[in-house]
Image (cartoon, rainbow, N blue to C red; front, top):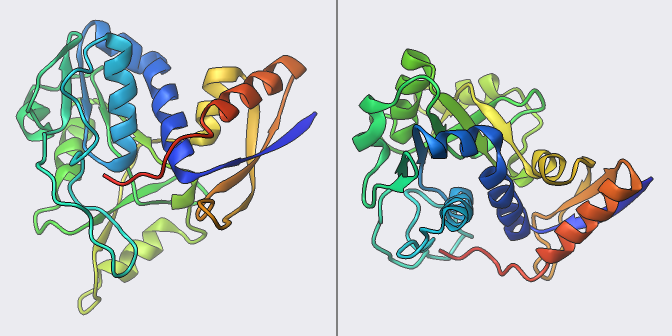
Length: 248
């Protein structure tokens, strides 16, 4: 049994956010430990859903919950005050803190959520880097590599690239190249496909992409499984249909 659904990029961000709030490692660390949600547009939805699940979302807004941002040529993102990353310790939101405040205190079993700008067919993610010292990714990697902190990468399917991420990074980072650098890293990529599986038990695959009238960058997903799982996935995806475009 296969059913097909169009999921826009903003629907995908909301879907990933809902699923991350139900992710076993996230729920575990919310009871005891530290969760760091590094600011980014997809992670804004994740933070919204996680804080709502805890009943402590008052005061959070996705507006400004970003560092670098990609907009269409000629467009300009609205100016907004950066509120900090979302750092939650033993279920308590440490308002205003960032990964730089929490980084050295992170220990094995804690969880960091970091978005990505690309991932390749093997599931290897990468981040575009504009900061001359590497930005938030290097702080997250210090905890991941040095202390076995869990690193999960919520990222939409529109970020998929066909090439090998290491080769792409080599080209972007070569002396004389123009534009952002590209930093590959190890982490558990978590897309809309993983979100559907976690929330409904259904399997999903990417069949096609793109569109117009708000469907630009969208993913056309084929969903299969038991009749109950496919029905649940359909209800879930339809519940996201009114999600407005992400403009933060």
